[in-house]
Image (cartoon, rainbow, N blue to C red):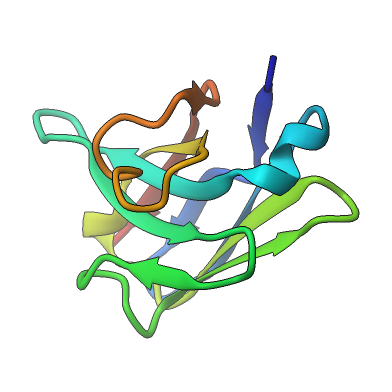
Length: 121
């Protein structure tokens, strides 16, 4: 069973940066699309970014040019570098994994516990 453990959340001022990490267990990491979702209070869950097993990436329009997703297959870890943070980026960020790229945005099979990101104005 894949276990995902996020780290790196916290409080940052607008314009600042944070890097989230998600460590995955098992060799299944190498066979899965990895990604990050977020959910703010009172809002629907949103797919922020995803990365395929061969490094193809996709971003939500709201974070393009500011966030970068990457993966280190040797460490079974996926990262989300977040720059130029805005108060509207405040949310709980969840790491997710699934074998399917095309339906990843719907309901990935594996989830982390979430990490809070708070951006103050």
